[in-house]
Image (cartoon, rainbow, N blue to C red; front, side, top):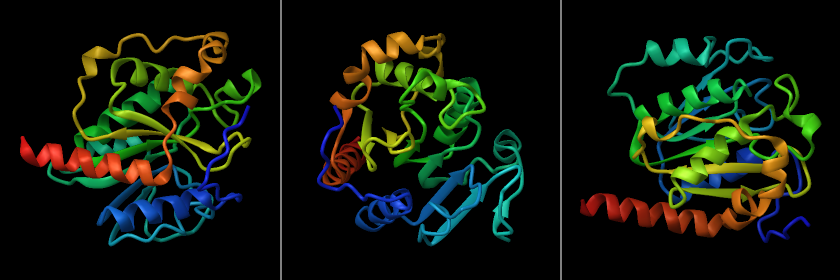
Length: 220
């Protein structure tokens, strides 16, 4: 059963609108998007002071897009460059997504946020690499298992195969904890509530949690 969300946007532009709310309410000033594609549903909508998009083969002629593979982009990035919000929606292959995540962590501010797309394939047919979701869900399972307090989900478009996102709060992460990334769709489907619905927060809860993480981080 699809949960009824009070902040249900109801259209394909919901991601950009959601990000704008996050950026505004948390006073973020820097945004990195991995995997821009056409830019219509997200990139072109997001408003942020420092905005960077990366795509090896964007389906648009946006001049501000860095035309590189994500690995190449991060290898050329100075270590001191940090972002408040990073959105990962490039390659949908689990190990590449994990590399994108690990590289993003290194360039995330301590009270920042990483958002992953494609964590909820509605059918097994959606888990093939060249389909909408790929096998990103396997990497998400490991993140939730190892970092339950730092992960959450947000459902912006219930019932739609691209309507759910995974959220990771803060930049504390140990790469050695995740070694497997090998789960069947049957396992995911059977344990669906544990990795998706029981992790779901509203937009206001996400804002509150991010502010709390910021406060705790400043006290350390």
